[in-house]
Length: 177
Image (cartoon, rainbow, N blue to C red; front, side, top):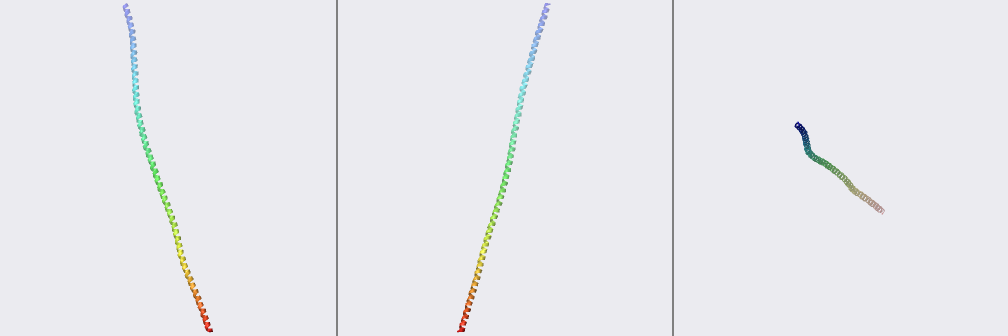
């Protein structure tokens, strides 16, 4: 019986020892499983982080390309807008220059017209002076001719009167004499 007791005691001790070993093995397995699970979670997180980083890098690269494209579009649009503004400014400047040229041409024509009118008035006045001068010379010639004629007539009358008086005196002298 003693052996049966010892055996039972040993079996019970063994059972306790086996239970302790089993508990220890379970704890180790759980610990290993948790450790494996944590490792897998960490690996998954690292993989997710790497994938997220790669995706972020891809998104960042796309964003940079979009920004570069947007910048180039803005530059092209700005250059087009500045080109349009420059064309409009040059067109306006050309129109202003053409209007100024037309105005200066009109002013030159007006000045030339007024100068021509002044020269024409001067020449008309000069012509009038020359006509008056020739009219005056003709009138002077007429006056001188009338005066000569009048002088000749009066000289002739005086001569005729003198001759008549002389003839009368001679006739009176003859008649007296």
